[in-house]
Figure 1 (cartoon, rainbow, N blue to C red):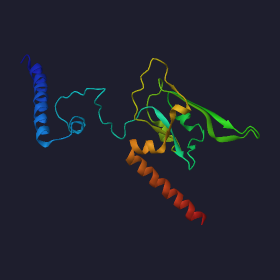
Figure 2 (figure 1 turned 90 degrees about the horizontal axis):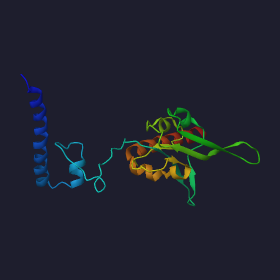
Figure 3 (figure 1 turned 180 degrees about the vertical axis):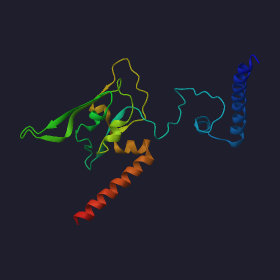
Figure 4 (figure 1 turned 60 degrees about the horizontal axis):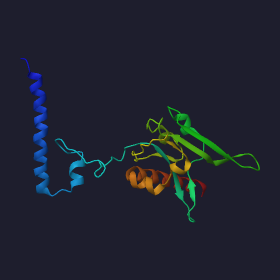
Length: 194
């Protein structure tokens, strides 16, 4: 029969339209907060967010441009976890990571800290391989996706550095899992030494 596909498509549209209003009625009687109501994964129907004022709640596993993690010392110094091993640059498919290693001026031997660290965000495909392969948990994927600009997005070390507390705030479950594994590893190392 002609037009059956059109009617099925209109049925889907109509059911979404009706679900929108039934969800609004349920929301009114349950007294949900507006943010939880429209941004939950269980929302039915069609909805629109007024983007700059309202934003979707990002899932914990959301990933965007990588950042470097540092631990805060007692005197407020930044202890960068990165040892400039270069594994992240080798694992990166589009080759958007550049690392310049630090060397001791007296001996000429390498120092386990990057002198310069660059990520070209315009080339980065946000795959997360750099964070996955980093043996020191020094590079993680960020939730900040609002980086549009009229210039080239070449992030240097200062722009990439963020504290470990920032990572714990955006990915609490992963951070707890990683800290527990780090504590177990330190305890095993202490038991083996003592």
